[in-house]
Length: 508
Image 1 (tube, rainbow, N blue to C red):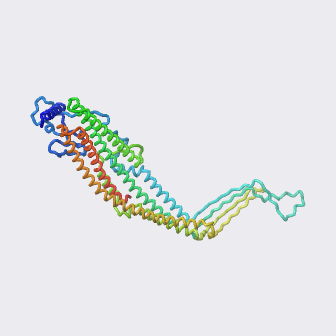
Image 2: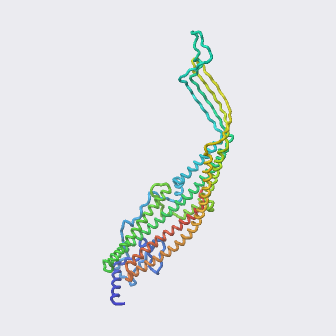
Image 3: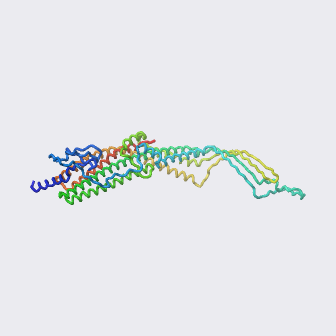
């Protein structure tokens, strides 16, 4: 090697040692994400992704014995407002049981589904009433304001002194009351409608079961998204701190004459990129918290603690939701029941041509009083009657109902095919997604390890002067991205398992 080259390497080495004054090159627990401990190449510290144990002091020290006056190892201190963690939300879920209780009480979709059951039960009660007896009471009070009564065929009284009797039989005030009991004796349409209404109640209950399954899946998915966003936010802050420390180191090298302005600019670009990644990650966390609040029917953000157990979600779901076949899922069964309702409605339209018979009995009383002589009149009556109605022609409305209901039957048959295929596809894809997520996690873990080793070797090469600052910045950026990808893939495995569990489950 030429003498000039050896001199440059020696100057850089001395400048580097003087710059650090015992500063550890390895990053501590809050330093650069994934910085491995000093030792054998590829040896990594144990811990969560993006958080490594600090290197030993002896590993970073020169091979020669240091003087007794050498200061202790220190780390580069950086301060930035963006390094502060995201503020906690107004409400934090303590456990999955609390989330399930809020779902039952506050979820708008479940409240609507529950009220649909109550509405269907009300319609069923009304259908039953059409076939049961009805009892009506009626009363009236009448006062005649003006009028006269003339007797025809009776000669006038020749005696002018005789009292007049032309108005003595008028009763200006009268009252009447009646009680009517009716019972349909031939009502095939009303009798058939009872079964249709009861089937509608079952459809509403199946819809509630399916809505509960979808809502639980949405809440679990949102919880996993929040935990993922929390971990990504943590990794982003570690990456920003690492970029800031590299920028400070590069500036010191420039001041000592061993670095260039280009190295500083590249480090500043790396900081800007890490800061932009941090901002977008924090926004994703806020959106995930708001999404959880919306699903739970809460206003604002709802978060989960860092100790929230994702494995507990899967265990709770297994106890709440029973596994089954895709063709027995609640939405598929509801679609089949709706087809049966459509067919019954078609039969109901045909029954509109059938006659209707009703038996009724009426008890009536009437009282008249208030004539000139203070005489009152009372009468009562009890009658029974049977009425039969035979529909003949209504302008063609019944034929129109037949065409409408035939079309609805065909539409519902097509919907059943769509529901069955969708349920089967969801189940197949959910099971396959678990294997795909696990494979993606393994690949991401391998890529993270390679990125760590690359960043470490690049750091060593940069200190020796064999690579540029561009390579150093690029290796750090790829390492941070690999850490984020691994964190996302780890939680995608949990999300895939939950989706596979709910793809064909029945949640009562």
